[in-house]
Image 1 (cartoon, rainbow, N blue to C red):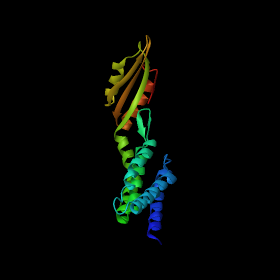
Image 2 (cartoon, rainbow, N blue to C red):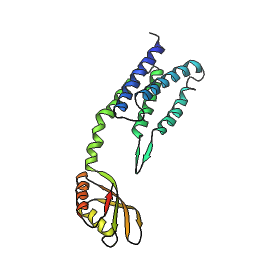
Image 3 (cartoon, one colour):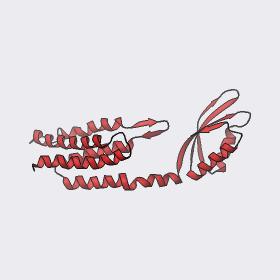
Length: 208
């Protein structure tokens, strides 16, 4: 098999393996996107070496990172208080890097990086979930009547459950108020506080 065809086949395999993981988790950039990025990076690297020789074999390949930056930025979005798509953007970035390594003939580096990336995406997936049980950050919106409660009452409840808190916003009229707090603490403590809040008559409603 021609060496350049072999490179494209290997980049196809690498892209499929990375893309399957993203597709399985229903991410915006799935198997087709990641595979095309991997194969495209390999192709551009091959062409850069062929066209740029002997003076500047990197003149096309050096622009791959710029293009990948635009694609990666497209999958990142902000949803309320959180940012999503960062891992998918990083996967796009590493898929391009692996494709470039294959295109340059650095097969050992490329597939070592592929194994490391799959390890991080698959085997380390449980780590954030475990850590999330010990330390969660939630943004609460609590509504109450001023005749029944105030912010000090709310903060006393947070202290009761040993939660760290930070007041973000407050909306108030003559009779009612809505306060927005960022709370940090163990998942069980936050859930127990939720049950406590629902049993109180101080709070009209809350959401997080």
